[in-house]
Length: 128
Image 1 (cartoon, rainbow, N blue to C red):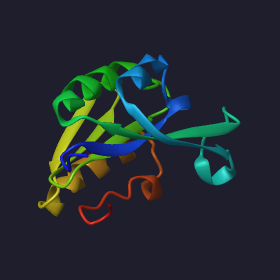
Image 2 (image 1 turned 180 degrees about the vertical axis):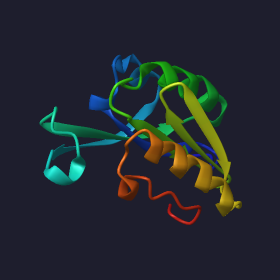
Image 3 (image 1 turned 90 degrees about the vertical axis):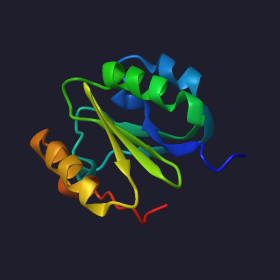
Image 4 (image 1 turned 60 degrees about the vertical axis):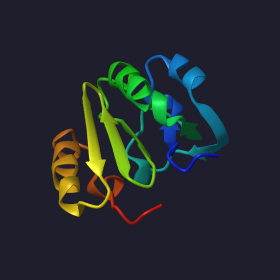
């Protein structure tokens, strides 16, 4: 498996249209019962798909996610490889160079402005 493929998580409940899942390789699926910590009382569970995206498909998948992520609730998805970290919100894609920690500040600020709890915006160039 090439190391430049991207890996990350897509929460199925964050999608208005889940057909984007057909464009990624689902490696594993876990279901979490929603607790107060999740800050999503309008749903009962999170279905977390650990996914892999081919390097040559990441821009296409990111663009589709910008249109597919729930527009009301401030969801995001993120995928990284050894060099770059894509963080995708509705109508906004950040491509962060993982060697430049300072680039994460703008992403975190953007997410907090959407009402996403800061502990859910725990981006780091060092987290695998």
